[in-house]
Every structure is written in C-alpha cells, then in structure tokens.
Amino acid sequence: MIRTTATLVTVFAALSACSHAERRVEAPLPAEGKPMALVGVSAVLGMRSAQLEVTFEADMTDVEVVVWGVDELRVTSPTTPALLGSARAGEKRTFAVDYVPGAGTSTLAVSVTGSRAGLRRSRSVTFDLTPPRLAVPSVVTPQTMDGQRVKVTRLP
Image (cartoon, rainbow, N blue to C red; front, top):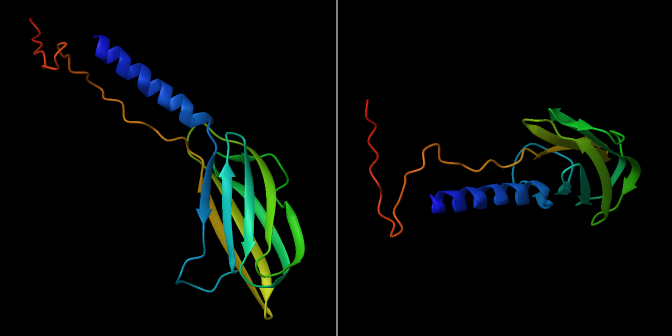
C-alpha cells in the first residue's frame, strides 16, 4: 500500500512538472522533398506562449510569417506577426506568439512565404502542444515489503 501511494505521488508530480516546463523544438530543413522556402523554424513552447525563431538559409524578398491554431488551439496574438520585406542568408528573426490551448489536442502551425530568384516559395511547420500523457496502470498489483506479489482472491 505504501509503495502504491508513493508511485502515484511520483506520477502526479511528474505530470505537473511536465505541464509547466518550456521546451525547445527544432524543425530544420529536410534533405529531400519538394521545393520550399529555405528557412529553418524553431520554437520555445510554453503553456500559453511561444518564441518562434526563423533562420533564413538563402536571401528572400516579400517575406511573410503567418501563424494559426489547429485542432483546439486558439491564437490570441496577431496571426501575421511579420511582413518582413526581405531577409538575408544566415539572418535570424524572432517572434512572440500567444495562444490558448484546448482541453485535448492542440497544434501551432507556422508558415513562412517569400520569393527567391523570382519564384514564390513557402514552408509550413507544425508544433504539437498537446501535453504528454503518462501511462498509469489501471490495476495495481499489491506487493509485500520485500517485493513479492500478493495474490488476491475475491469470494462470492
């Protein structure tokens, strides 16, 4: 009984620690695929806000960054945080985004669009904000103090 209580307290403490921590997520350029804007997008995700960082791998003009919520996420800051005009290769830009996550699945979507060599290219990235769920056993097997399982029989 003591071990079961200690285990449940540990699980709930881990859940509460995970739900308040910020985490950094990278979305680098893929090595292959269809033509897209040459940008890398990373985010530091918090409970109600994110810091987005866009890294330009090539010179671009007419750059626009758009964010929106998918599933149950609602973005509360402006959905177009930047109309940048132009950006140079190697340049990094940071944007703050505020949102309200839903009760279930919440996803933040980011699109960076711009022109390079006369061609309009875009790159879209999503960040999952759904809190991780830890598996909690539905049945707890009683154990003795030395770790031996206790067999429980129900009588009619």
